[in-house]
Length: 529
Image (cartoon, rainbow, N blue to C red; front, side, top):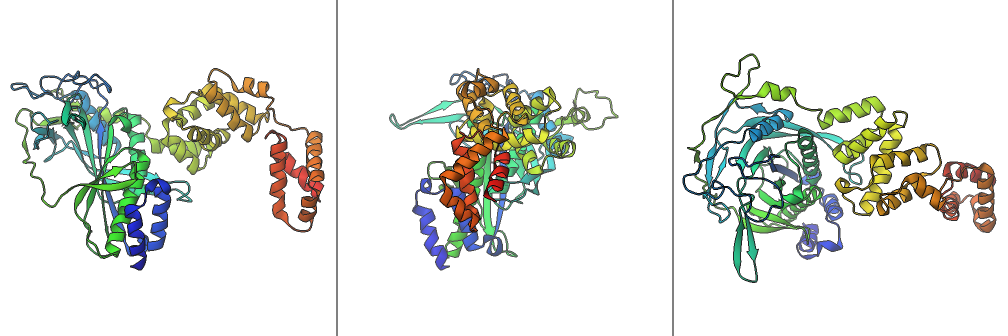
């Protein structure tokens, strides 16, 4: 209790920029022993924009970045007399996604009107599915693994309550100077899949891992671009905590989560905020909160003490949606053929992971990272297919350890990486033939980012970065370092073995990172004996 009183005001007032949210979250979990005293419960709701050329009920375009109010049909603007026409592509995308997530497809589903009055919803209602959605009772299996937090990946799953189709609303633009609100209806009517997950997650890392896996699946299927920065993939998180054995606690909903890492940070922060409040004798309020990316905190938006009455009613302008479930029946009424869509399913991410582990004996930790990033998987496949004699394990290690490190250091989005698979493969060849070492390999990647038109071989030749492998030359280098640091060598011989790392760093520095360190270490040990 006293600890909670000390920490709660700190969480409440301290600028988050001075301390990473994830590190502080982990520390609070340790201090309060959340796993023993409290049980966090997390459930996600995901809105995924369907990749289609036209909207769910109209022929208006869906391109991101179109001029304001340029992709709006009469129906999107709710002009009286206009009627919705269901987009077949969107239904097929929803069913394909549901099949990949092991959902039960409803042979007949219905559309409903969900009433609420916002300026960016011209009709005063949203067409969605509430009573009988497109699919129900699915399950998503995924692996939770965050380096620095988890030593080993562990399997997890979350049940899917339902998957439904619905239309998006428009966008309100608020001008503070003129005190006016402007409306852009380009998003009005965009096709969405809403996936409602059961509350069966326990922390932010599991929530982020679920989102990563779902994105990987949707990208494989081609049913959603998953570009969160464009609003094509939106996540809301429901969070509560309770003591083990007691009923579920009061739930809060977090909106406006704009990235995968923000999902983890927002959920973890909200768990700790609620625990610290309860430890301090305060009550958690049922409310909607948003994630503030500037302070890395959740902030209150509105309370939920009075449940909003959406006055759901059947959509009178759309007949029941019927699909074809039986492969033995003839599709007399041009229904959507579910068995056919099931046959067209591509290899899903988990199957790719299993194949990489079984075929190439790559550790699962590396496989998880590679498959979760489509760009990495594409590079891996192309580099290996170009020359099958290349080591799959070496390629995997370099991708995850060296390549990703350079990309992250330079803040390069993998989707926009200028380094081609051909350049990466050439760099791997230099490494495997021992012309360069891992330290130089990172420098080569750095140079390729600055000069994308160059080649690894040319860069290494121009800068004389070839690895020093000659044993006689390495021996001279080691002898010189020991002579220049005779006092340190004497201390090492007297038992201070940790000094050995000092000699290794001296070799790296004196050779501009070009020494074959495996050979150099062996030579050093012999000389010091």
